[in-house]
Amino acid sequence: MINVAIVGTGNISNLHVQGLLEFPERCKIVALCDIYPNKAESIKEKYNLGSDVRVFADHKSMLASDVKIDLVHVCTPPYVHASISIDCMNAGKNVLVEKPMAASLEECDRMLEAEKKNNVTLGVIAQNRFRDGVYKLKQLAKSGLAGKICLARVDSQWWRAHCYYDLWWRGTWEKEGGGPTLNHAVHHIDMLNWIEERSPVEATAVLTNVMHDNAEVEDLSLACLKYEDGSVAEVISSVVSHGEEQGITLQCADAKISMPWSLKAEVGMENGFPVDGGNTELIEKINKFYDELPDLKYEGHTGEIDDYLSALENGRKPLITGEDGKRTIEVITAIYVAGFEKKTISLPIAENSEYYKADGIQKNAVHFYEKKSFVENFTEEKITVGNY
Image: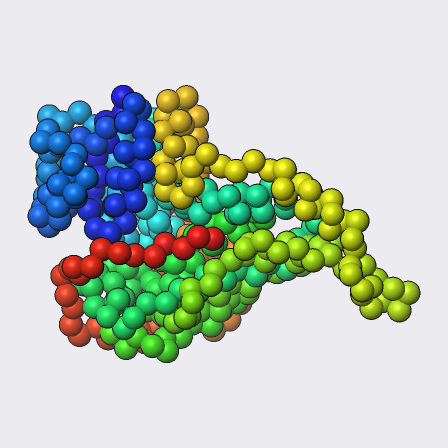
């Protein structure tokens, strides 16, 4: 039985609790921690977790307590992901940290060092890998049936009302670490890295804030990533998009495959123009491959929690490792640097770059607006986490 503690009991913690409760024979929630203990008490009551579940106001007192903890889920605002995760790993606990992994590459590296030093397992939430459509798109891309990827388009389009950034930690470079490029597109950039199985070598970007004058950070960014072979990926990160349409389109050498699922495959006439109806033989072959892929047993957070628990039980790495989390942060950092400096940025980002550390990002970040007031908590718990 794996004893689990959850640090941070805001909205996203609900998905962690729900996922953990799917596996009562494998894990048990034994502690909840939040700087607002009443929020932790509410979660405890909402899910009827039992009177023996301890509630703490800070993670250090939790770690110093006599509660036996094997695994800590870190569900706090991004600016303390690294410090809390490192404290927990130094105390010998395994850690599953919410996205984004950390606010800087330097923090990512310190987390990876703590994992190695303490012989524990670090996992990073990127739950959309555990969606049937995304998983099948990955398998299809890997099969090579559509040919090499020439152009990828990532749509991380969300909508958030003006009041979304009223929450005390949101909309600041110091505490949230950025806008939708970091906190929303992190899912889709992780998917892109996973599907491509490589990292870009250049990034160009435009950052802006067009709807949220209560936030320092961007609410919209457009980025172009270039790979060593000359292929590119375009990434839209937005919280101004009505309809919240998200997905990934891969224009490959022989076919277009995308999620939500769509397939096109052209074949040329003698003059180079496409034949009516496209490459019917390839379309049939790809559809057959796609349809025969089995569905995942669990999706979303539950799917990732299942994989992470299996990793602990079997002594292996989880599907989404700390190294994966760092690769995603590196791409996001490059997008921010390109936007700040208004020029193309090369990857990887070296340790001697001023953007390697969070204070370098904060020093150079564009403040679109200044946050002058805030609220401590919202009462509404319902959130959207997307399907792709």
